[in-house]
Image 1 (cartoon, rainbow, N blue to C red):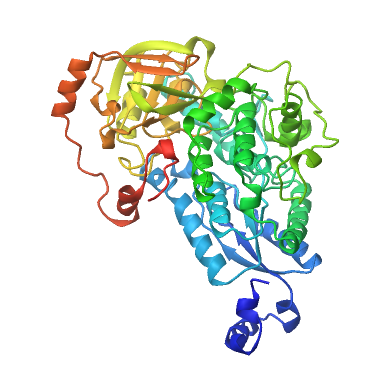
Image 2: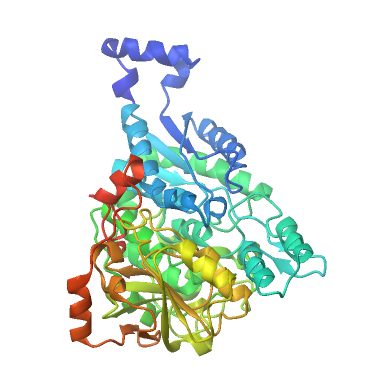
Length: 553
């Protein structure tokens, strides 16, 4: 066993003495040492239950003959960090999580790992670590939150909460109405209840083969989540015995499967950052252009919030991610020969799976749309590409042309929106919020929610070199590459310029002649960095383009 390096023979007697100081017995040290990476904390609602998940995982490890050893990973609550400097620290934690987990796993020579994440950057950060460390690993997430319910019986969620603020500033909702949302939108622990980034990534752990069935959809408060955790603890021992490692599972075909499921589910646009970053750790390069190729062949089968009015608990009731994969397999859209963390192939895992709710998971022959939920757009405004959650865009905004309203920070844009300065037909441009320019590539949920809450979601587009929350809906186009801080064309946009967006054609254009753009480029001067010290300054120096997953070099 790998752990023999720290617990076998006379040379490791000093190491063993430290295990004895921890209270481990000689008998426990004879078993495989399993690192249990628990992201529990008291500030993230999606993580407040992870101590219970960890105890269940450890029970499963012990039941199967292993010795569990728990250590922590950090996590940021994007909702609490939203709309201020805190959001600059969200994406950057993905790499901190990967780095710290690598350090702990290799320093202590674990035989296997059980990752217990739940929220937005925590899941991809631990997947990156799993690929980098490449010892037997399985994921057991904390589970989604249940949907909320208002006094009149309507179901609600966090995206409605953010939009309620826009409704208040538009005069459509009073303070009592806002208070009703804030008291009911998030009724339980768990990752927020729609197909936002956290739940998107947890669902994709199943699609890529690193999580057991139900890992993405069993609600956090259900006892089935604890049973799943125990089974994950048991299964890691099997993976250790068979020496099945993450890179045996996360192959090019598995990433193709994950992107296909992504399109069918209508996942968050943040998956277009995270999947390439995880693949990079596997030695696989994912091209954004491949996403459109996959999307063109993959029907969109689900419209969960924010695209629709169904929630993660409903998807679980319909059969979960495996039921979606079963529908996709009817048309041969998945490679079912790939190995998974069950020790079996995906095809074997799908045997007997049933779609229990064709209204929620559309049959493959009757989809919401014939193409996938995410589109990558290119044009002279985004030569390296940008992304939009097509499944959450109103039909009338699939094609749009309007004047640019230009802002050099999220705060400037929010102030203008709340002050009623944005008009129907406008294209709001928020720049210098990319990986380098932010730094940290903030999510723009507040401005998009304000626009939708003010009933302009069918009339106003928003584009940014930053990114969007999975809770965002509307014509919100993010990850404009190259970003403004790198001198990308978005830095040259001026107030009133016409911008053309054609989502079906995957095009985005700045309708300004080349001579004018050349003159603007000659006059352009990159602004001073917003942050000059600390981790964010180091991050800005090392981070690559969003088109490459914002990985560090």
